[in-house]
Each structure stands twice: as C-alpha cells, then as structure tokens.
Length: 466
Image 1 (cartoon, rainbow, N blue to C red):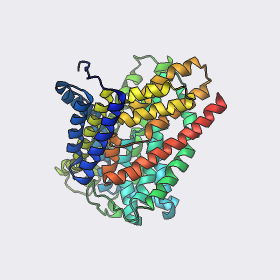
Image 2 (tube, one colour):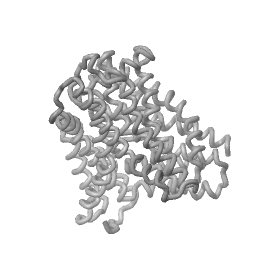
Image 3 (tube, rainbow, N blue to C red):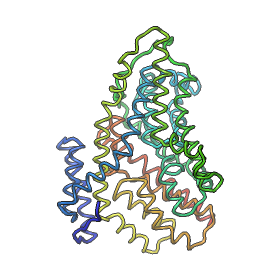
Image 4 (cartoon, one colour):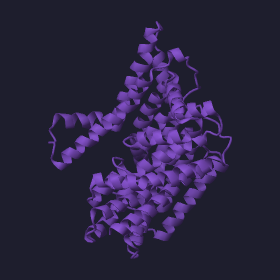
C-alpha cells in the first residue's frame, strides 16, 4: 500500500477524535448491543475519516490492519483450539486436572494452574498458550465449583507477565534487539523482576478480583464437557508429550537462532533451517495437534475396536466453529488499532514525552505506554518505545544490567492499559465468556497492575545498576 497522505490535524484534535471514537464504540457494544465485529469496523472507518485519512484510503487501512491481525492470530487460535478440544474430549484434561489436584491439593488449585501457566507461557505466545490451557482450567473449575474467574484469572496473569517481560516473546525480544541488550541477561533480569511481579501484581490481584465475581459460570466455548470413563482416558505421559512438543520445538528454534546470530552456527546449517520451520509457533502447534489426533484419539479408539471414520473431521469442525467469531472480532480490533496507528497519535505523544526531559526510565515507560494506549498492540508499543529511547540509552553508556532493566520497563509498559483497540482484549475476553465491561474489570486491571509493579521493580534495578 502506498504511503498515505493525511489531512493536517493538530494533535489535540486527533486525541479528541480517538477519545470520542472509543466512547462511541463502548456505547454501541454495551448500550446498543451491536455485535463487537460490526461496532469495531464501523467506528474504525468513521475514525479514519474524521482523522483525515482519505475516503479512498481508509478501507485499505482497515483491511490491512484486519488482515495483519488475523494472519498472526488465526493460525495460533485455530490450532490451539483443536489441540484444546482434543485434550478435553479424550479425557486428557481430566487426567491433568486429577494429577494437578492430587499433587497440590484442591485448596491450591488456582496457584497450581498459575504456576503451570508460567512454565507453558515461557516460549508460547499468550493467546495460543492460554487457549491450550483452557480445557484444564475448565475441568478444574467444573470439578471444584465456585467462580470460573478464580481459576482463569491467575492463569491469565501468568501468560501476561511472561509475554511482556521475557524473550523469546516478540515485544521484549524486539526491544532488546533495538537497544543492543544481551538476550540472556534480559531473561535473567526479567525473571528477577517478573516472578515477584507475577505473584504480587498478577496472582494476588487476580485472586482479589475473582472474589468480586463469585458466580461466573464456566464457558462451554470448546464444546459441552464429556465425562470420559477412567479406562478410556489417555495416559498422563501421552498428554505430557503432546503439551511439551511445541515447547521443545520452539526452544529448539530459539537456541539455534541465537547460535546463528552469534556466529556459532551458519545460516546454511541444516538443523538451523529445520528449526526455523518446525519451531515457528503456528507450525509447532499444528504438529502438536496432529500428534494429539493420532496419539489421543485415533490409536485408542482403534484399540477399542471403535470406528474413527468422519468423527475426527467432525471434532475439528466443532473445535473451529466457535472460534471463528472470536477471530473476526480480534481482526476488527486490529483494524481499529491500525487506524489509530496511521493517524500518528501515539508517535506524536511519545515524541513529546521523550522531549520533556524526564528521567530516562520514566520517559521509557511513558513513551511506550502512550504507544500502547494509542494503537493497542503490545509488540508495536515495545518496538516503537525501544526505537525512540535507544539513542539516549546508547549515548548514556549504561552497563548491561541497566540496559536490561530498561528493556523490562518497556515490556512492562506494553502490557498494561489494554482497552478496545487491543486484539488481546477481545480474544481473551471472548474465550473466557466475559462481556466488555467485565473484560475491563479483569483483563485490563490485571495487565495494568502487572505493568506498574514491573515498572517499579525495574526502575529500582536501573537506578542501582546505573
């Protein structure tokens, strides 16, 4: 798409247009009860026109933002939903839930789910990882009773913290690359800051919020629950193999990519080339879903003398059908974010904050936060914030720990302040069965507290190291 020519609008007017657009969007969704997909696209087009994008260009921007978001989300959500449905319908979720509750006890079930999510979230992106964990969360919540939020929100907090602060997730990886930080040290500093952030800013806050919603039901998004007889359930080792396969493949890719960048492995190395294929997150999830089909579904049924026939195809259809609406809503959120990005609102505000002479660590947080609020994407916010702050960091000749703390600060700012232009806001909210207001009170609040606590801790590390 050619570079757009926007009508000249002062920053204050662009900010006003953005604020009014968000208010209208919320009124359409909450009061008028217009479907979020239509609401987002209507407001996106209207906002683009009001902000000065030409009539002939505004649809191109909307389609570009929609397709970019769907292109990155649809494969992850689709394969994740199929894998999750297979784990649930074969009784694998019951096996994992039993093992978890036997090990940690029913009273610690929310903590056990949160800790399991921490490990699973290390290499796997937030949306895909959480979708795969959902059947286990559903099963534990149905078995123990009480509010679904008590089990879902701590897990969400785990995925949010890992996604924001630790490589190989795209935001902190991009920020570290732009600033020339040592990736390994960023991981260490990220864990040092991230673990207390997760517990105090994520887990405890999630538990406190869940108490305010004592009657939240368990969604049936992945299909109605099925009580599989114990004799027909898969072995714990088989479930573990299916879940660990994508982690191993993604780590394989990360390790060889790091080795290639350091010169230890050539770009033509056959293992490096294979890792780039099988270690890509969508491919890793697809391979895991295929393995689950064979290992958890086809082989056990044939051993019992049951026909498989078209049942597997029906199972996949059942898994994909309910997520289609979520993918479309997520894409529409990306389109709205693209419109706001094209207006340049976030960059104008970020540049203004950078020029105010604030302490570097504060400026980095506010600049990235402005980009996050303006356009929605955590990855774009982190990348842009790092690019704006990189010259000051490089000129300041800071040591490696201080630079790593700056990367964590930027990652922290990129995960908070989520609202309607963030595709994750719609994705997680819809998978959890939350309405728009509830998503603000849960997803947005947990993300913002994680953001603030991580910023406070990274600022302390930066001051000490600098």
